[in-house]
Image (tube, rainbow, N blue to C red; front, side, top):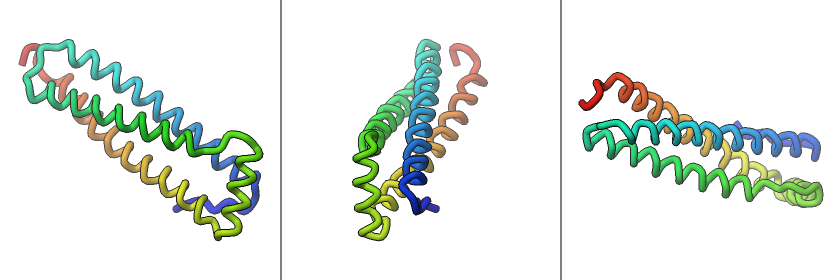
Length: 130
């Protein structure tokens, strides 16, 4: 459910929360990429190497989405005020759109993260040279 900020201060807090969440997700992706690099050095069957490449591509796409979302979040007080004032005049449509984009991204990332964790644990169960 999207947050509807009624004051500029609430909107700023919401923006800061989103920035923190994006930063945290980017750190998780870096960790997952390191795991993928370690997996890629193992002697694995081609189908597992294809899955490693699949996750590498997913993480590249997710980092691009993070960069786009981060770019769309205002930094300066003036930009925050402008967006907030425009939102109030259009019944929070802009804020709702940002909130929906964040929620959609987080849901998709959580699904990918869970899929990667399942894959990662299956790799660690594979006998070496399998």
